[in-house]
Image (spheres, rainbow, N blue to C red):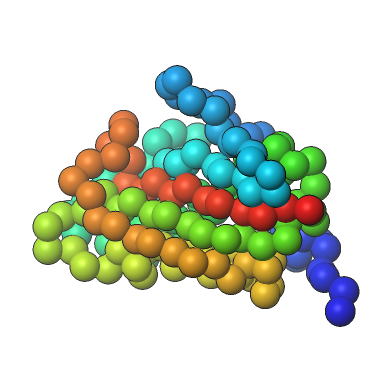
Length: 154
């Protein structure tokens, strides 16, 4: 069975990968061990700036979902910069999502679907991944969502 070309799917979805971001502290954006690539946490950005907010207070679930989707695009840009060709991705193994949320907000999993659904749309079966979604008191720079990703590559 032939796999769909990732770049054709991105174009079909109207997505242009941005330039991969640079680390904001003492770490690298990606690290590889064997065929496994670990991507550092990426925070949500909107209009080129940190997407600040707290789910359950200043942002609703649908906005959070859009923020998570935007992070997925940034994660793919970093993965592309690391491996050179997203068609080399054998599997998106796991996403870990941190959602800046109030104590009574319980829809972190729905927020994270913004990233998970896009990854599955782009990679098909290869994009079905394990996942964790946590509510946290704060994220660096006040960002509303942060997501990290693990991928297996050829």
